[in-house]
Image (spheres, rainbow, N blue to C red):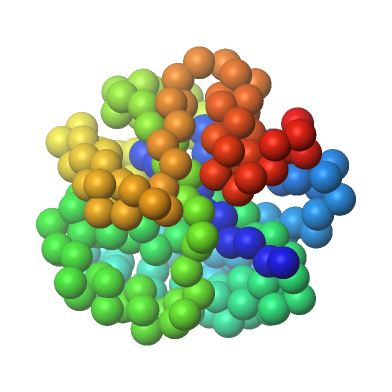
Length: 217
């Protein structure tokens, strides 16, 4: 049976690492697991990602940014996510529709009505069964993200790290509002501390929610 799990959180929360670690744990259970990310996940969406995350594109206006995310998601869902779910794979996605609500809806102040409509157009009936939100103070997340970017070779993807502290606080509050709206779908994980400690929290929470006791180690 296929399962679609999304991973969300502010910059520097460690979700990308945790996607990989949970995928490894699930594979040890004998499951077929696909990991992917947004924006991106396939060649066309990766091209859009380069536009969205390039710090040189500071002139990109919020509505254009929103539409680019929707376009990348439509391609990604059709080309990668839906086929994987149809063949029975577990799909773990680093960011999905909730990120657009948090960043563009709350962070940019575009509201949620338009974004929910665009997400529905882009993703159709493809919705996660479980969303893991990695929560930590904004200042700690930004410090982590900026340190990571300073050590990364190749083109920068740090456009959002250049936003104000107030912006990132709105994003975090937006995520927590989404949790309040759909508590049955979200798992909130404390992202503070060492990587392996956080991974243990994730495994325990997923095992509890998906009734995988004794399997997920």
